[in-house]
Structure formats: C-alpha cells, structure tokens
Length: 186
Image 1: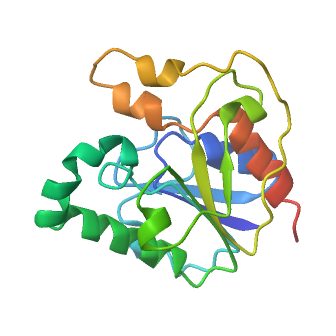
Image 2: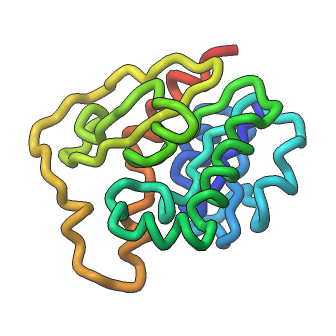
C-alpha cells in the first residue's frame, strides 16, 4: 500500500508502515527527525498523489481542550477556525482510508465525534494520553498489550525547547498497531 503519514516529523508511524512492507512517506513543514522518505512542505502539495491510506496528525495547538483557556483569543483572531478548516480538508481528502488523530479537542463538537479514543497503556506504554481517532473505512484499533503503570508522565515534563515535540510524538506501540492492523486490509 502507498501510505501518507501527514503532519509527522518524527518518522515513527512512517517507519512502522515501512517495516510492515508498505511504501510510506511522512510529510511535515519540519524536517524529519530520522532519515527516511519525507516531504518537507505542505501536505496539500502531495495529497492527491494516489495514496491508498493517510494517517494524519494535524497540529492540536488551537484545538485541544487542554488549552481551552486560550480559545476566546484563538476564535477572535481566526486561528481556531483555520485549524478546524485544515482538519476538515484532511478528512475530506480523496483517499480511500483515513485515520486522523488528535487529543481530546473541539473537533468532536465542531466537526464530529471521534470513532475511537485510545490510550498508550493499551499498546504497551504505561502512560495515559487520551488520543482520539476519526476513521474513514478503517476499523477501530484493537489493544495489543495492556500494561499497568498508568501515569501522566508525558504531561509532567518540565518546560523546555523540545517539550512540545516529545509530547506530540506517537507512541511506538500505537504506531506498530496501526501498521499491523490497518496495513493488512488490502
């Protein structure tokens, strides 16, 4: 399968699909953190390149309810609507199978409710981080490795220049589950 991993700089999901035998490319405005097929630029530059599946990780900065105290300003200056329009454009892409992931956010009330909410501890990581999935022609992910140690370590990181990158990276167990379960659909 030809798979687009949209808004991913880390290469985590891209490399999980490549390891599973698929042709995958990540795309982000940032360079990739690890070598591999990556388009640095707007996802809309390559969205119509004949992909069989897209896993999209749009920025949550203006959408996540964890930042609700800033919503009034983001609504007033248009940042929130711009972020919602970006999400809707990804969901409307002419790609047969789509998964869009984001934390608990206003996507649920302004576009539609997610099809599934997963946690890292369902996929081998002793963390809590509710992750919503909006799915098109994809089944819900089945947990692969339920573990204890359900803590919010990732949210307790001290301020720093790479804090946002660490907090936004997809957990390896979730990436592997996506590649194993969704990569075997054709």
